[in-house]
Image (cartoon, rainbow, N blue to C red; front, top):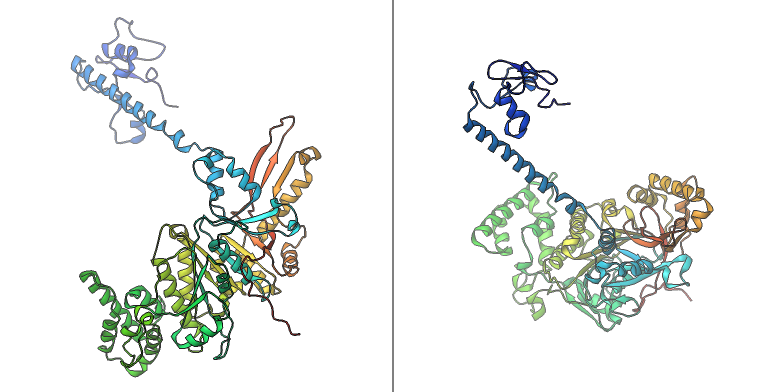
Length: 603
């Protein structure tokens, strides 16, 4: 404990010492300096004496005056120093008073802000958030739509309904076997974002969407359309299909059975290309690259420097001329030309350097694809074609996604979906580039006003996507390997979470009957896991799922309200409950547009 002023041994001007509890002279005989210290401590600022030994200096003090006599001028200076210290201390205290204001939070405001960003919610949560004072200033859930209901209460009350929050950007990962309902679930999400219907919910401002589709089963006679194209059966949804120029006739024939669908060639303009997209097209990464790829990278870098000086955009013709001037060997140019020729087949014909001058040029082909966002419009990029490989499809999907995000309209929200992603997202460098773009897009989804939906059979295509998605919907499957992937990346399937879930259940069972009777829950409850092997029991739940049913993992979703009343207090404490590490078993709703995913049976 630091000594006080009276406890410190002080030496007066004549060498006399005075200590607490005793004095060598009376009060009248004490030096003026000491009397001043006792009567007005703030007038004397005691400073540590300078010593070579820090420990000694910490216990030694000397006065501000080095003279043997105490002058009035020095007394005034010391008094002003004391006042300055007091002013500084007072200013610091006033500044510290601001901390409670910055740290104070209203529980209702925290609940409102957190629920507003929830990707899924139930009817009781909707009622609760509208009862908060903040909802009078900010509209709560201005855009939402029904996604499904609890499998245990699908025919029951509306409290078991599960709603998708369209207002908040989110990301969804859907997986499961063929015929389990993946594409149906994807179409329901697209309906929620594009179809304004009183049956579903509230959608005063429809979004604009893009779907990427690639099918390896295609012939010159027929093929399978993207199931999302059936949204064209609704009069308020405009559906257009962008296809390769090498398969436009077949694609038009495939989608001709769907009224209202417009099929166009996918045409890229010179202005649609830039340095980043060209590097992605060449699958230029940080690993080892062939020599010709280093040349391409250097040419693009030199062009980029020139663009920064002149202010011009990327010029594909100049890029070709600079590559030709490098005098690469035929062995080096063959793989490069394959990629460039595929790209050139998708470019507008007027800018295509390898097209014949006598070729027919239509107005649409020469103007390129229009990427202007339009509310209620769904663009399907269907690259199903024998001439387009899955690797090239990933590169083109990457360019189309960048163009879709580049043309931004703050008044229109956006949704991007990958249909049957396992058909083209493999282990290739192009697929990895597309995956990295999706990861970056999901990380920035709040700033891009974007909703991302990925539908695939195999959850193994990119486990990193599972880590970032807000919602994971698992339909029926039988593969234990798939379960191991989900177990490593989902909170509701991890061993630690299941142990915590078992502990929660044991704690609830151990509560006394009075407390249990005073606690009620409104909403969708999670699936009970009571086995000693929770992973095996979860696999049993997945295998038993019926078509259209799914397990939903969404830790940030608010799924109900917990009401607790203690003792004789009639006022119940209402707490909104998140799903956290629990899992919901949900039956996806029926579609409001035509259902094109029905299985074809032999009669």
